[in-house]
Length: 194
Image (cartoon, rainbow, N blue to C red; front, side, top):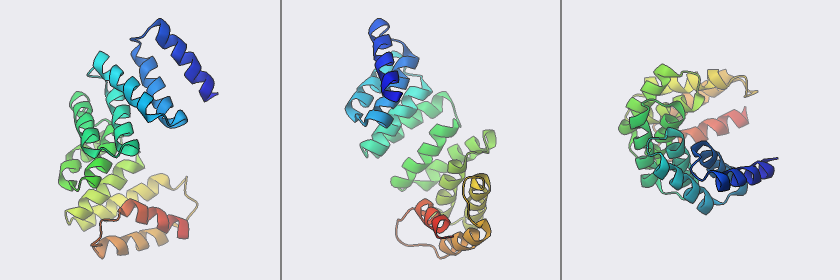
């Protein structure tokens, strides 16, 4: 079905090469379905040329640069442009938190994450990124609360005893891990163990 959708959107693009929604959807399908990162980059890059203020185009292009190209600086720049257009956009803020994590810039991520949570408090990934940032700057109490809120939001998806995971996570956070392993990965390992 997704391959058919790609073929359809390619026809739409031939007829209307500046159709922004077509380009954005086609770009993320190239990234997610085809794993054709060059085509995704070109398509989404063209979308941002047509509409430099398109938060969705900037966000998806940042995903390609972050996940597939490991170009964290480029992803960060694209997300900063998106967040100037729409401050506290939940998806862009969440990814911005992850990017800042990989660039070891926790304090830079906090305002965007806090603002996004104030607008949209149902995204577990926002709380995950914020718990990392708080941990990195030594705000362990806030980090633990964010981790707990992330678990509460994901409870319907995880068939685990969250109370055991809170304890495990709290122990990990308060031990102040010295390596740069993502606490997000630690949290998921704890969820799988339970």
